[in-house]
Image: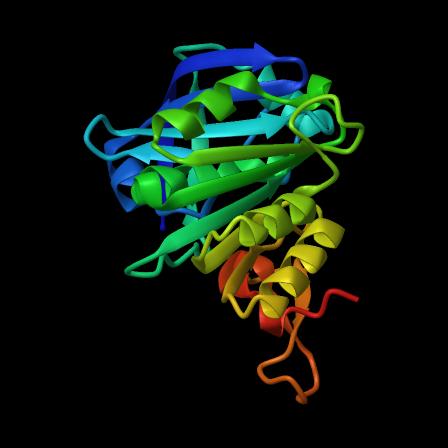
Length: 259
């Protein structure tokens, strides 16, 4: 982890999404799949905003983030232009861990899909990506193309059936297993209720599952204690609080209290 001044080398927009590439060789070389950056948005904002790392290119010294405009801070961040600089803390947190062998199912819901690209690029043809959207209009075509370019098999589900499989990511999960796919791990990021059911499906199929949690953050380094999650070390142990920023954001799904 470090504090870096990063130059914005590209910015593009798709609806309410901003796709931004930052340049800082040291930060890019330290970034790992599933980690996040804590970014000072500027303007009249005080708290930094946590943004997941989408991808990092150590050779070129760039780190890519994709985020949705959700409030005042991300609105200011989305208005930044190429050539401007950002004050960034990171990379922060503990990310995903890939198994040495076997295929890995990457399950994303909406904006939770962005942090999975770096894992897909590392895994290549070992990656199968299941993405869920409410409707076709909410898809981000460029990201889907990036998953395919990485060598991953991409399966898409929409709630209304406007694209791909009608249903959700668990529907896709079940279909893949029924078709004979075998997975040595599942990695998932998205809405909490989605991850809860992905975790249940993983347990049913006896596949280790890692979930990336999202909570509101203040400091990003485990000091303010505002991003706690209920975690239990063992099935029958009492849950205790851990910081998503410092102890996560990625946790073993069996340890997360979803209720």
